[in-house]
Image 1 (cartoon, helix red, strand yellow):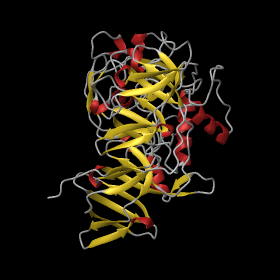
Image 2 (cartoon, rainbow, N blue to C red):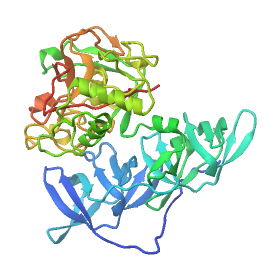
Image 3 (tube, rainbow, N blue to C red):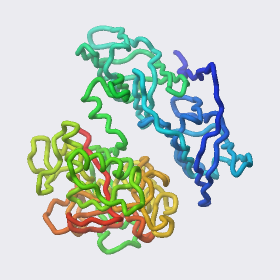
Length: 485
């Protein structure tokens, strides 16, 4: 029996230019340090391999509390994220002209001032079952698939996608450029990739969720060969797996409308935005539809959460996203949820298009879904770890993703801006519920999370508030959601 091994090597560059990278380091005690990282590369280990990433390729590193969750490293390429641990004990840098070393346990996050990059070559985008994603070349020129009728050797240079399912190297579907599709079990121990940063990884097929083969388009960006694969890729969204949880004031120190606590069960998985919708994203919608852009209160746009948007504005954005991706709309003109055939439904599991999360989905995701550790705030019992609120916000919104994420890797579900939900506001019942959604027409829609202007208690994951669907405010935005079909 072969011993499984992860093949890892580092591409030696013929010319290596070492230059310090500007960075902003947030320490665990609240200090913020503007500095230059003087390391050449970051050594990182995941559960599928160990490799080095040049510092010039790193965009951000988010550290958990010592001894708890994995470190998250994101690169300068959109949708390239690794979860694991730094092998380097110390981060070396220059601050005010002095060389320093900080132990990683004292650091909360590092934001590096490397510019975002686009991919300008034909490569693949790999999604792993751990949630990690990366770009690279496929160095394995062929794969062997055992179907129910034959053993087939396939060349990897004429594929559209490979979609994996289950454990034990189960390959569900391979799509070819010529229109062929086959299903079977992949027999190779590893598929070998070269990352854009130069490292090589041999990844077991049992750890892979999908491989999408990308091609260069006329603008120099990349696009999937298959539009269906592109639609299902769900950039910047996090998978929340079905399960049950206790909704409401589970600590006994909340407000009356957070009671009675009750059990909610989800029979479906859903995706939710990793970040709140930003001005950068919402402004594109306004330009495409001729709508007036909302005010940013002179705080800045780009990656700050969009504000001054009503519930009606938020669902219009969701419907526009659905139409852009050729999906059935989630809402009719009266704000009712719609199924795939355009019929009104009260079951979120039947909605295909982009939408706002239901109130129950929002709280389940904020609590960490089936990975919940029972925190009061979304990812910590220390509000300053995860939330912008009145004591630390500087009396304005902050760029999304600058605090620690919760157990699912979702940012800003406590504080920064309130977030609209799909539901009408109603009082809780003690009865257990399945796929909960409050569809009874009322006068107010729910919003959640607390904001930059609120006190600590309001940032708790159980806190509720509401207003009319036409209401707008400089503390109110939203994030998007989609049912997994």
